[in-house]
Structures are given as structure tokens and as C-alpha cells.
Image (cartoon, rainbow, N blue to C red):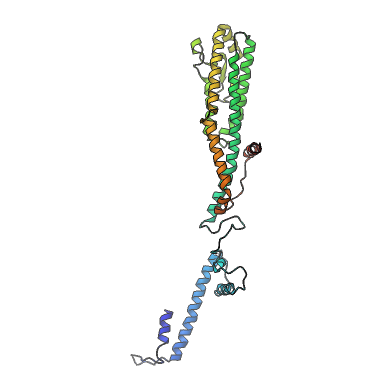
Length: 329
């Protein structure tokens, strides 16, 4: 509209009026154009000022011409470090590092990227803690394998009290194993949802409860010798009176049942730790993801921001400390 009015004002000094009304003087036309131009400039300045206010986080810009003044100063070099006009809007075209808050402001959504990096930081220490915890489980599974194998040494040469002592020792070691890891696979536990850990506890429990051990000798598993699993606590209990009765009635069959149970239980524990099985596979996956994060963390942070430092729970902190000891050795 302003351009159109200017073209009218820049015509001949006078124009005819078709209706015979008063002719418009060139000076009056020029004054009108100047006033309109000033008004349009004011409107444009206010509009630009509003946009700048939004760009600067809602801060009010003192004058619609302030930006132009700053831009002019930047171009003339009077403002050090402001040679890039877009830097006035925090949109510099030069390569930017991270902001003081650790965010990559060149991204479309820096906050979402920052949150994602926070999650990666947390996953990093969680994976290390899980590696430590599962490594300890692997060691104790080997211990359970040895405990099972020790029962294979039971023979007719041992008296009933010696057999009872060996079964009590096995039950105590089994209970230590369950107590150590039962909580860690439950909700909010460090290994909750980790199949390798859950299967390990389940398989050894089922091995104790197997009713086919001793079937050829008339027994229905080790439970007929008094060793059973409490359904509530998941701990092993030994009924010594039941064991004594079984030994008095059929000692040879009871010993054969113990030996059969020993071999099967030890085999179950061995399989859990065997190559390409549950525990080694999970440890291998954890090791790979830990190495990946370690190798790429600087580039991930450069891309997405630093993220918040991880805040480990006491359980994670203990396992993480154990992992750091593993790494040192």
C-alpha cells in the first residue's frame, strides 16, 4: 500500500479532479506520503519488536530500532564477537558447542535431546551394575554346582548322622544362594526382568523339587528324604526325622536317590553357566553395550548434550563399586 501511495505522490505536480473538486497540491501529497511512510515504519518496527521479544525468551526490547542499532554495531565491529547477525538471536551459523547448561542449542528440541542423554547416563551405570551382579551370580552358580556334586560322595559307608550333616550343609548353601538373589530379581531389583537371573533361580529350585529322582528305588524325589522347598520363602527345609525314617527303611535306595539328585542338580547348575547359555549370553550382551557407550559417549554428548549425571540407588551404587573393582583387576 505504501508503494502505491508513493507512486501517486511521485506523479505530476497537480492532478485533475473528475468531479471538479479542489485540486491536490504536490506539497500536500508529499506531506501525506511522508506521514504514511512514518506510520508504516512504526507499525513494522512494532511487529519486528514483538518477534524479537519472542526470540529473546519474552524479554521486552526497548525500541523497535534497537535491533537495527545492534546489527549496525555488529557490522561496523563496535560489538566484539557479534560479527554474525544471527548470533543476536542465538542462531549463529558458526559451529556451536554446548551451552553452559550442557544443552545443544542448535537442535530443534534441545531439551528432549538432553533428557535422552540423561537416560543414557543412567543406563550406563545400570548396565555396569547389572554386569557386576550377574557376574557374582555366575560365581555362586558354580558354587551351587560344587555343592550338588558333593552330595554324590554319599555312600553306604557313611552313618546316618554323617548323611544328615551333608544334607544340612547343602540346604544351608542353597538358602544362602536364594537369599542373596531372590530380592534382586523382584520388582525394582537390579536384575528384575533379566531372564538369565530369573531362570537360574527357577531352574535350581525345580531341580530340588524334581519328583523323578529316586523313582527306580521307590522314592518321589529328594522330598521323600525330608528336603523340600518352602512355597512362601522359597528356602530349603530339611525334616531330619523323615530323613532318618527313609534311611532306616531303605538306606541303599535313599543313598541312590541322593546320588541321582546330586548329578542332576550339578548338571542344571553347569548348564546355566555353559557357553551360549543364559548367564554367559547376558554377560556378553552387557559387556558389548557398556563398551559401545564408553566408545561413543563423547560424540553422543556433543550431539545431544551432557544430560544429567546418573543418580544410582544404594543397590546400584554397591554393584557399580564392585564393577569398578572388576575393571581394575
